[in-house]
Image 1 (tube, rainbow, N blue to C red):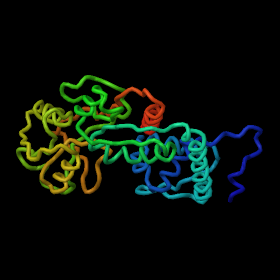
Image 2: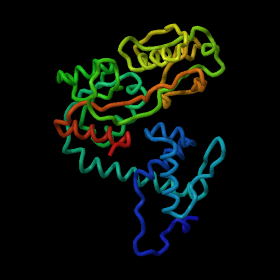
Image 3: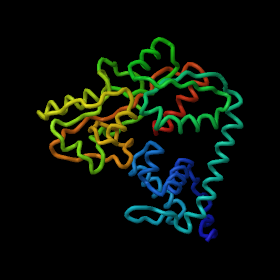
Image 4: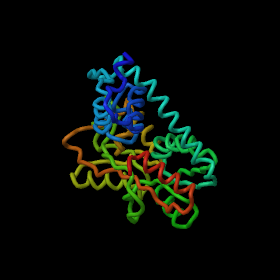
Length: 295
């Protein structure tokens, strides 16, 4: 079987791209294109295209696809070992040649939804490559993070952009649908007026949801007000309310509600704020852009 993965004798063989191998390993470990896409901040379609490109490069099928799961083919099992070693060597090489020359401390601000779901994985990757750089993280509201960056109290921030009174600032690194979410099989979605779990005044999710409902003339009441998306999630899990929520953050038993009477919501956008004024800040800036697929 390993002979099947050997070069065919062509004088110039394609190089296995690390992004393709990373996507392959993540799908293999998750057993799902959708879960892998969430971890890699890409769409399932983009991950599928990467796997297709990898299969074309090696001339083998690496996954057996079934309606509810995917698993490694015999050739995929062989490739998985090689892929893990290649990615590990790549990390070690970067650490050897880049990390010793960069040290320092970074103050970083982010929101609850990003700080608890997306940022830890990015910082873990950054720490492996730049172990001498300290990153201090504060989880705060987007508007406060923006204010602190402008006041030079924070070096950088990842924020949800589009809030009331917030200027379009920084670089948009991630965009996805904002959707209506409730507990699967729950009763909150069928109550009238519709009970909502929303953030405090000034939050883009709150304003978007209320404007959309007002535009449809739907009756609602604010049943649960909170600063953090974890509290909104708790209200939905308890079947107390419905909430506008980023699609990638939905976890069972919560589900997206697709009903014609509910109005569509605008996109959820994440912006990277701050100027890379030092080598360590530049390194983190580039790591975040790469993690979100911004080249």
